[in-house]
Image (cartoon, helix red, strand yellow):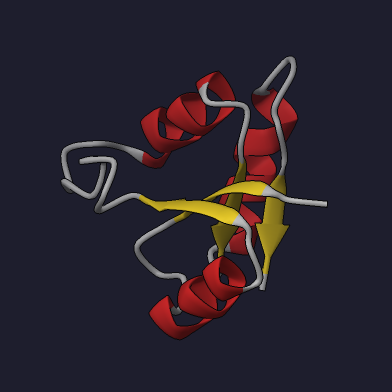
Length: 79
């Protein structure tokens, strides 16, 4: 099964590359133009949901709180 994922700026680049090698569709916030500090995490999550992707993050507490505020989020995967 191929996953559609967004990796935030804190997620290890080496893991992103390994997942890509495994065939997963991973977009980084940098590639999506969402790594600007003026783009709050809420906006990153909203973009991820609009793209029917799941967020890969190491900022688990914060994104889990955001996840609970979304009506239909694609998901959040913490490492």
